[in-house]
Length: 323
Ligand code: NDP
Image (cartoon, rainbow, N blue to C red; front, side, top):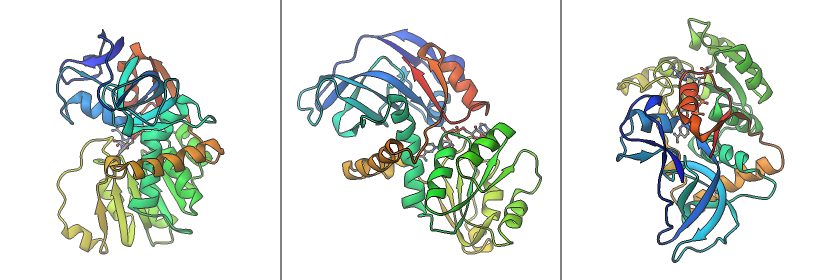
């Protein structure tokens, strides 16, 4: 089978397309033919060595496809079922083995590409607006990179809960996408000097109840300064780089603020949680209330280009690789 592998950490050019032996499904695992693999920011952290992995390493943690074979003891699925998964290494490949307890069935109304967009990014957005900080009707919510993969989903889901979303973006095309997703206000954060002051102006001086910040290094200070008293900063990623150490006293000075650094895997650690978040997201995709925007499709051979595009802020919505 063909796969996109790195032999050592590096830039996008470290990704090589290689021919590997077909994997065999071990105890409790499914062998799946991958129809679409999801490209996520975490893949770039693994590629660059920011999140170290054993080498050589086949990139990709997420995908959707068709079950080809069941390993010993694997249950709950049959050959031919359409399944999706996230958090399973080796997904930038034609074949991957997926532990059956980490696979979810893709409903008939949902395409494989939509399933890929719905899973890691969709469940992340869903967990952030329902569990990390449950957005309530009428609350002001700040979403950074609102036209990105997670950003478009956060904007839609927070708006559906009655939140008033203020989105930040870096281009006019992205501003239009954020508005289409439901953002009531959009800020071009590349064009203003004082982001927090603009957020305060848009919220009658109060600040927002919650900031969903996946940009990190360049937005962190403005995110803290944009919160209302007892507001919560949900720092869920660092697309612009990691945030330096923070003095807890800043939370006091900012108004008894809350700071959390969540990762999806702790919200879907049990089968019940995985089924809850994936089920809610798939149902919303199936009934048309959640739009999964596939922004870019690449053949597996262009995995390096996909990383380059994602890291250079050129992309919108979800990126998928077609092996
Ligand atoms: P996006 O599609 O959102 O791409 C990143 C966006 O961040 C860019 O398009 C850009 O939007 C913005 N950005 C701002 N500064 C930079 C910069 N210096 N370099 C690159 N991008 C920048 O990616 P994803 O949806 O895949 O991921 C978004 C964030 O969510 C990431 O930080 C990721 O790690 C995190 N994440 C966290 C998870 C968790 O479990 N905690 C799970 C999934 C994702 P603009 O041009 O508008 O500024």
